[in-house]
Length: 322
Ligand code: CP3
Image (cartoon, rainbow, N blue to C red; front, side, top):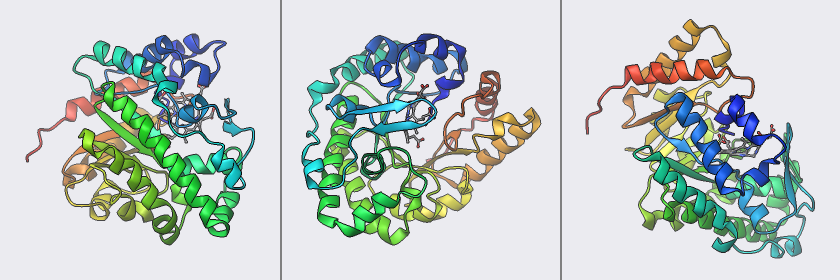
């Protein structure tokens, strides 16, 4: 949940009376909401206003994003028939995304647009659990108990994620991020066996397009080494792992994205400043660094603190060698 917009009054104003996924299907709103944090904070890149479950909705699945809860699915998947009922990706169902991306790229000028998709595991967890879950018990039970259903589901979702990323890149996105938000709940063994091949399939399927690929999950400290082999140029790191430690876990040459604790922007400014500078310092050993909040913007964040933080980071920018 990047959700910089959620802290902005101008976001709440345009979303008034419009459901989340309806907003994600209207090019005018996608463009306006994507631009809001860029206009206000002067960030170096825009992230497309959409959601990881949007392509599933666009393909016809009965799901909704319930405010304060998250994605909720009407008929959770339990067996192969449920997997077969998920349509294969069809780019014509997400025309509005292509239209919005084209419009955004024109409006953004030299500011890059980051597109994104959900990774198969995180999407599967919503489809199997029926909604958000703390332990992902049903997901893991299906993964271990019905491996053929699991493989079919992951393969179908990999096709959808790859297709959705391709649409965004072909319309002009400069980079893409694959969110495997909930992979951190898996053991390294299960991650490598049941998840990594499918994430690698997604990232491999867009390799020909030549844009930087970013990969991120929450609480994935123990998985960073495995995730970094999925076919990416940049590894996203949440706030739990110092970036100088993360450098040692990812592939040589990979840049890092991260990782100020999203809650720290509620602290007094001198704390925010000190901790942001600590993040920059820890990133010095990485071949490249995209500064961000370790897991997006929390609702209730003071937007003025975010603007000040962006200014602070800009004041520290250093040319990199190589
Ligand atoms: O800032 C942006 O708008 C960027 C676009 C963006 C959204 N969701 C918009 C959104 C992105 C990149 C996401 C990704 C996403 N969605 C992830 C992975 C992100 C990560 O950092 O790990 C996940 C797990 C989801 C699923 C999802 N969608 C959740 C858990 C929620 C929160 C529900 C809640 O209300 O607490 C959403 C809703 C959502 N997605 C909102 C936005 C702006 C809030 C909806 C609203 O304002 O009504």
